[in-house]
Image 1 (tube, rainbow, N blue to C red):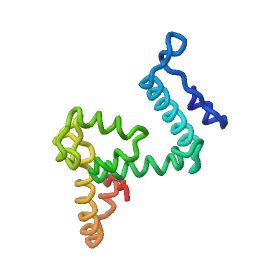
Image 2: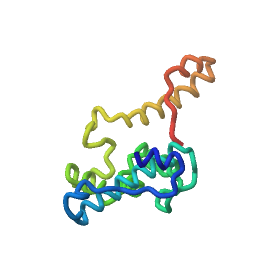
Image 3: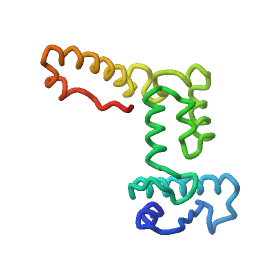
Image 4: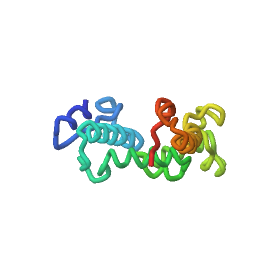
Length: 153
């Protein structure tokens, strides 16, 4: 609901903690409510296609998402943490499963593992780019167009 209100241009979004009117929210309840608020504001910015922001931490919502995607594409886990709405919690979640520092540079995630990670298309995409050059010189690049994946630059 808050994301829709933001999309329609409301000047202020509010959040409610799960404990509202049942008891006094503690700091963890407030943090969770704030994260929900940030997600709603971020979604509103994306939906409005605006480079600006509802609030200062959401400046350039689309740019932030693009930077996160580039970091993921480049297997740069530490860089990804910088672009999450709650970097500390993201790192905590990651480290619960893959605590060793080597996993911050691994070319897979904890969910998919090394054999099934979709970002492996990066390697395939790079191979296709080289193949495209070869096909262009031989006049067969049109066959490659149907299978080539978009690259994040």
